[in-house]
Length: 390
Image (cartoon, rainbow, N blue to C red; front, side):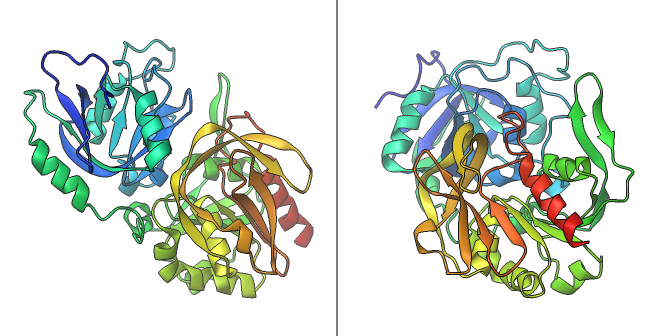
């Protein structure tokens, strides 16, 4: 299969899949090589947010939209909240070369920004063909490399990709979580205003950081909440010592079953003690595991900003942002778990509610605004529940 798009006489980047498929192109961003799982993202915008989303740790992101980088990057759109997650994605795979940025908010060229963050990129790839391959065979392991001299050891790269352990069974939350707790007061972005600041005295929310995105914290602050962020490995006692009115289980990378080895016990205690809890993405999967459900690896995963999800409680369909390679097994939920949302792409589970505890969760990202505000009600629903219980 030919996946390169008319590469130059001397390619400066290559993507090598574990089966030996070799795709040449032009390098951008950082030099060197990195191994990871190749996924595809169907969003037309938000590439800076995608590349800094900690949920992409261990992955190489293929952008199906051909023109990436047109509006440059800026300091406001970075999503990782913890310095440990500053290089979430290991690589970016593009069709067209990056053009000069043209946007009033642009501060840097995308390639320069990627180089500073250690993200390796390759342009000149037929990303639609690569996406078709992923849809047919699943997300492959691969090595991406950028060498200005165009020197690559393909045999060694195939071997490295084939021997890489992959994401199944791996706990990556510990690699991207905060090392110490902190307060967050920044609210959502407004046109010609920027981000605001929450100075109120609303409900106190403790966010367990499995790789939290900043906009989750901003949406909570925008709903009037006081927000404290704690490490993924915080104990139940650590959390309750902060006297929370509610707890949020954040998004994050890796296999939920692996992260669950130290976190499911904590979440079970939250459930048993009726602590209001909201899970998002990996946090959704963690809540499901704590309630007795199962999770499983997906063949292609869901990555994009155009996914239709139905809220079963209202019948409404919302357009959401998704980024997950594991899913909750919605066909075998325990009796105490009610399905609340489903994906209209494949019918997979996208939300649950516990019948015997004030806990709910969604697989998608309600803070990501593709709708643009279709899913903000998730935060309002959670906070309104806290206010009623107060």
